[in-house]
Each structure stands twice: as C-alpha cells, then as structure tokens.
Image (tube, rainbow, N blue to C red; front, side, top):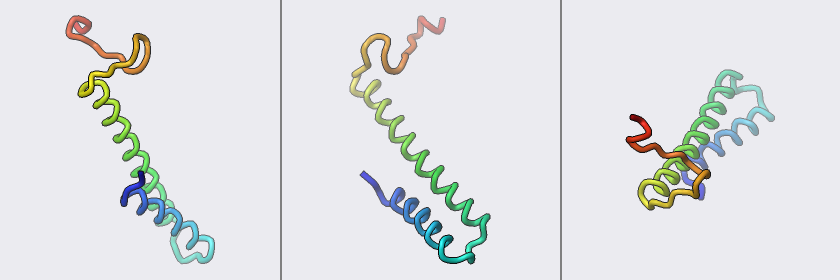
Length: 80
C-alpha cells in the first residue's frame, strides 16, 4: 500500500524527469539533490517498515523462525 509520502516522492521524481526532458530551467544541483533525497526517503521508510514487521513477529507475536533460519537471538548466558 502506497501512502502520501511515497506518492509525493514518486511524483517529485517523475516531475523532475519530465521537466528535465522538456526544459533546462531546473539547475542540475537542485534536480540531483531532490531526486537523491526522494530515493533516500523511500528506502528509509521501507527499511523501517521491514524492521517493525520483523520486530513484531519475533518479540510481540513470539513467532521465531525455525532453528538456523531468520534472526539470531542472544540470551543473557550467551553474553556472559
């Protein structure tokens, strides 16, 4: 599901590319900076969503993967 932040980032990237194709009025530094920021925002948002989903699966729902799969958890005895 795409929310308003993702739609805004995709629209900004598309708008900059279309505007850059038809005109040279947008400075290159502005174009590159805005596109890079949009890509960083999109990647960060998706990474946080994955982190929250995995955290919930392991620590809230207590549905750890089979032995040898998924995320490795440590106990207090492992640390000592």
